[in-house]
Picture 1 (cartoon, rainbow, N blue to C red):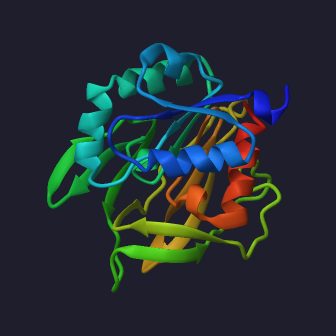
Picture 2 (picture 1 turned 90 degrees about the vertical axis):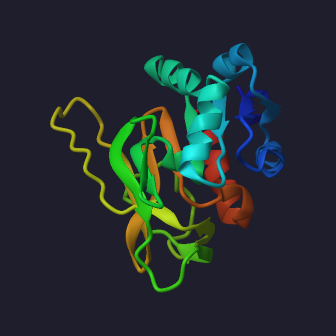
Length: 214
């Protein structure tokens, strides 16, 4: 099936620039719909979860829209999900903002914490140190820059895979003050801290790579 036949739902739970995500996905050939409808989100070839703002508010909105159930059910069946910015952060176990801890979706262990940098937020273009053999960054030049805007991140990746039959997640890093997780490729679950929909040709290549796996 060609990319133009892939149905992607941008999950509309009130947190995220859904229109820019819709335009970027349509530009690379996906058949895109913005909705929070449970059945349509469950049955799409791919589900994109955007996110902007506070971790706690995004989690609250996601749960109100049953997005936590949708993400969990899709992943349990090996159905592709991609998270962007705070939509990636909420996939981790917890977030800490202003001293308040909020439970995330716990797809990966890890804590979203304030970035340790002289200048926050981290806003603008930065390179990414991608692992070898990644599908997510296939065809992307090593010095390509991606657009970031965030004050929090995961600075410690602790998931270990001891079963050789299970493919270990591929984790990409960026440094702003200290290193933090910039992207994760983990089976049916992909995520980026940066905004591929705002990252020009490099971002379009990432979205094309994702669409190609659906």
